[in-house]
Length: 255
Image 1 (tube, rainbow, N blue to C red):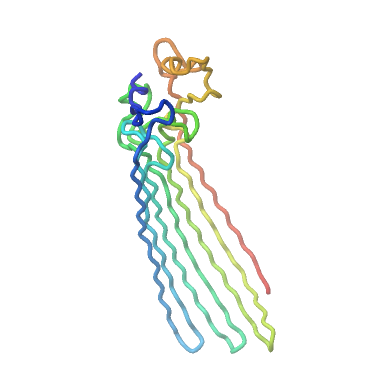
Image 2 (image 1 turned 120 degrees about the horizontal axis):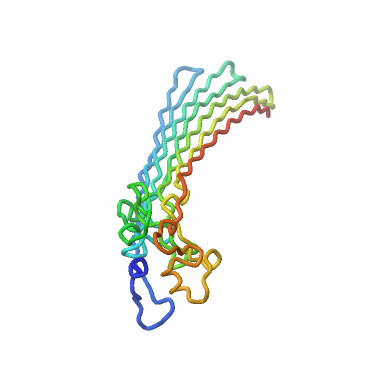
């Protein structure tokens, strides 16, 4: 009952359906720049260094005042850095070598709305908001886009690192040019996310046995999840999900 009472009342009194409108606030802050330094070391040698920076964030408020809801709500930061060093050496007027070393770091993530507030615990949901990491709202609802869909899976972060080295040698003779080279690349991607770690309860008709009296049965926790006595099994919990991958590639080219 506490959960249902947390939903706002209709804002449009002239209709029974589609009677709730909300003015959400969304902010996109971009903080990016690129810098490059070129150096002519001699008649046969040139070099450059490039640096790219991104520290942007997107934020959007919840559809409801007392519950976290709405697609894309919360805070989505992006922290990226890019470094590239290039060196060109001319052996002869017809033979030129180009070398590049690059490193890119891309780290993006998500902080759900109302993070830091014990929303579900204060509503009386047992096992919810067991620590700071799981604060906010447990996932309750059917599918994204439904008005009754509230909560989320929780924090996540996806740090990525890419290392690249490539070299090419060009040889010109008359009206023809041959180019030989190779590339080495390694990409590390990690993913940190509690897979339903904040708990979830589906009220979609395909996952809970509602029998026409959906609103009343929701008060009992749904036929699949209702227990007499302690409601420890009401909120399903899952462990934190951590995944990582590493991909290394190399290639030789001739043109």
